[in-house]
Image (tube, rainbow, N blue to C red; front, side, top):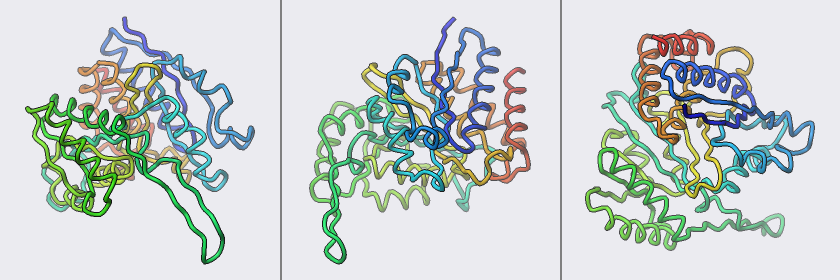
Length: 351
């Protein structure tokens, strides 16, 4: 039997509700499918932890996490008590950067049982590969002066290594999907980094002659995500562009509450981390209203990372069957609670 040890960080807000729900689903799936099991070690690192200790995680937190096969994260943030730049950079981004989780992947698809805000949506199924370690989110820059002379500078950093590995990851995925990669660019306005990005994309594409390619400016690409998302297969984007596109992807599905994400370590030195796209939603915390689908779909991405593709596909099919039958939380037009949605998914997994 395959055994996977997971580090679980429920985090803040509804993370404390949807993570246990997803773990219940994972446990049920493993029992029903057989041949696989999970053990969980939970860590209380969060804004609550910060209020008590003055830090988001202990000094040896990363060393502790390194021994696990994956990190299963809920949500981070409680801006009324801890500024976002402290909570995120002290936990989520700290793990991403120091564990070299250089790729972020976020799918979006026409989800059965959800009402897309698009007027007449065709069935779409796309995947955004986001460079996750540099780009526009570098820490290089600063502020000087005060008053009308105040100046802020932040430098975008694009290395050939970082850019190429994101693109190769996208091409490898496209070979297993529908064979098309779209590159998000803005070389008509950003005159150094984006022409560099375009050049690397063209070079990498030569190694994948069986994959079709398109290069599209980010402003047009954002519009196309709304007007014709069905034409896209795999989209590769920089840190900022990928961040923006994936929120659009979540929106056209019908709710950011169902969108999953994976932060992938490629060199095997550290575990990868899996998290939903949604935030901590403190306004509905503790009311049994949170949508668990984002966290459960995140578990599906983790199963794929472990090579358990059949089990992953089964899980997502059951989740769609449940939403298609009208058992949904109120954010996606239903009346069911977090517990009711979770219980129904578990029940159908056992059948």
